[in-house]
Image (cartoon, rainbow, N blue to C red):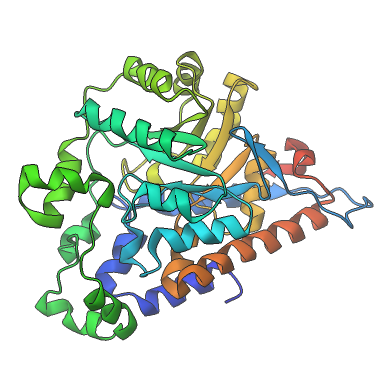
Length: 377
């Protein structure tokens, strides 16, 4: 596999169609999903020649720690669906490359087990739930497990209209329907590990199962029912105070919201449209960087999440004013393709592409990548 597209092809071959569609799909017409990557084509790279680029420095400071890469792994739900190495394999791959791993509330591995797996930096992604005690419990568990940062996702007042999942009848854990039997049967390795370990659960909220008595699917119903449509900036300020450390707000796209993030005490915002899985028709995150940077100056760290498939995309995001980038589907393709080794391959590919792009651009340090290195198409 020589690029992220190659890992995607391998993942598609190794996963049953409904599972791959869950990974790949977006909301409604999937316009935002497509635009997230296509938008990078609107920016050309303008190289500076005759610079010493023998040695590169691609480290970046983010959320109070130093990362060996200017990109890290976004929170993604239910990694066990894609490979039996699940979140632990992803976390260990991130640690090998010296970058941060973000664990989702919707994970299939306990946050304490992820914390114990490596000494590398970790962030926990949380929702503001109707059950504030559960939210407070997550904060306390993360503090006890020494997570470096907390990330609040704010673009999920309701679940997006993901039609692929409706068509496939996607459930958790997966149910093999008659019309999809051939698709599952053709993925022998995936099916074998599912049969060996069929108990796929959202383990960080598993203690709520007794209240529902519906098994694993009831857990998803419970979490969806807990998305609070009354959340305001006052609630975010409360959570920032509860946490007391580096705090990221994920799902911000407007300069006005970024200014409010400063006011409530956030450390960073993750510019994101949830990978095109929530509100279809939203702008690509890369197009939101410059206006937000202009609005907040250096008061916030900006993380760009969505559409990154090449090392050159990371360079373009940094040139527009981002402090770092976050990847989701690229590492999930790797996970599905080959477990932890596949995740490491995805990180290696982007690392090597990033290094090549920087040398050809004429810069030797991440901090030297500037807006002057771009030309709007």
